[in-house]
Length: 443
Image 1: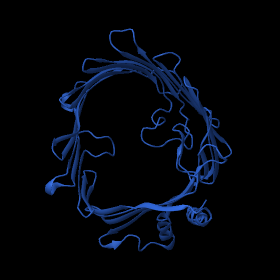
Image 2: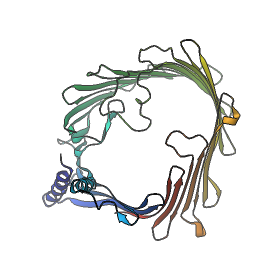
Image 3: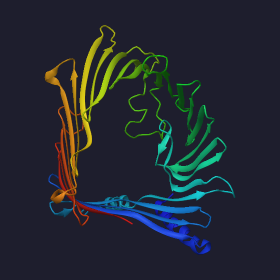
């Protein structure tokens, strides 16, 4: 489905409907632009545009059309526009990349009188059945959400992605003490991704959750099960937890979540059992947990064991925390042990004086009691809304041992002038040193 055709159809459909329905039309959106100069790579100008055209019919049903334009980013280096000097084919690719990013029509309302208000979307879809099998914006087609009959809910979609047909559906039921759902996604001719999930409260204070997801083309699966029980007969409230997870090494559905913190990355080939207890003793929150784990994709948990304890409290508006974890790596000839101690203190959005808000945190990590090799991570941010400093914000980061591709030093200074212009400076030790000026308007 061509995005430009969808955008044109979007506008025509809404506008043509107006004289027929005597509906009210609304145009809204966001336009922003930023000019920047990076001392290492030169100057750039970036413009973003989002348009939303909506209409409300008599009786309440609505139709809206949304067009999101790809950021228009023109770069110059040493005074010369980088886009010039390209071959016709290369320049055509650059122009195509500056076209429409997302375009869709969305209608909210029933399909029959007195029916549920379903959401029907045509064009670029944004679907999220589950991070295990379907959470993506890479499908063009039609989706219907919000169909309910009593405790039963149904969702469906049909579309295309990179030339492959995609079909999917999800059905769920909420019966009070038990909630469950099942989803199936067909990708092309060979791949079927599925998931079944249940959450139950069989007795008071006990919550049980289970999930099974899989792919028929690879026969790979992902299993999650956990339970939490609030122990009520002790002098203090204690919550005990027990969990199991297993993910096949080949588990990789086409449209699973690829975002940060998704439940699949770093879990492929892993099987693990974990258990823990947590309680509140006076002003201290205390927790202890342990885990046994295997990462050889053989369902055995014979590679790693760990146990840890943590305590947290609040002192004079500061969040203070400390923890220690011992990890045993099981080898063929010899086991190795790692001790990791963590200490942290944080202050979130504290007004040091009227109209001056500060947030800050400091974390230290000590591995195998080697204080000389300690990792320090400090963050701070200040926002002012007074006098000459009104609209000024400053944030900074220091990390003595950053992860790969992360900066160890970072500084950002921003200022929003009374006329709405946003000025800024950004620096990090990965090569960024940039001045910027921009504006944004919502309409």
